[in-house]
Length: 126
Image 1 (cartoon, one colour):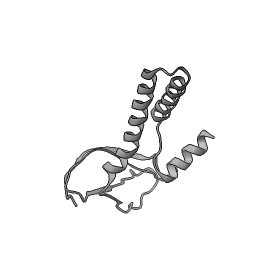
Image 2 (tube, rainbow, N blue to C red):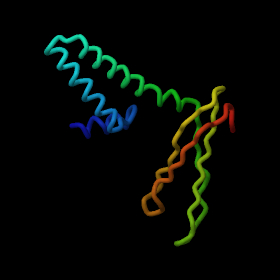
Image 3 (tube, one colour):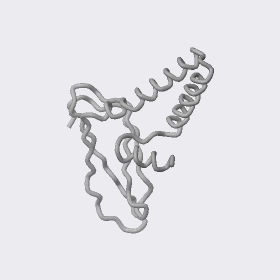
Image 4 (cartoon, one colour):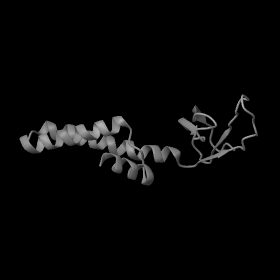
């Protein structure tokens, strides 16, 4: 059942990481314990945990707004030749975008997924 929920979330909204599932499970545990014992501090812990999950669910989508990604064509290569992949990121907003991770999912026969970390994309960069 957890795999089905994770697949639905990945297709429709966000993909929760292991830490997200862990915090969600602990928040649910603290909420059920608070309901059972009526201890106020457990309600506070569960409320803060659910608030952190809500903020963590909306911030990635907001930080990716206004970013356009395109991949330049892959030049033909032969066996043993290095494969060069170029992703072009455009920031269409007035604010700089910081701390992004870009990766390109290639077919497994070509290469492993290429990953790079982008520290800053300047505003209105084309």
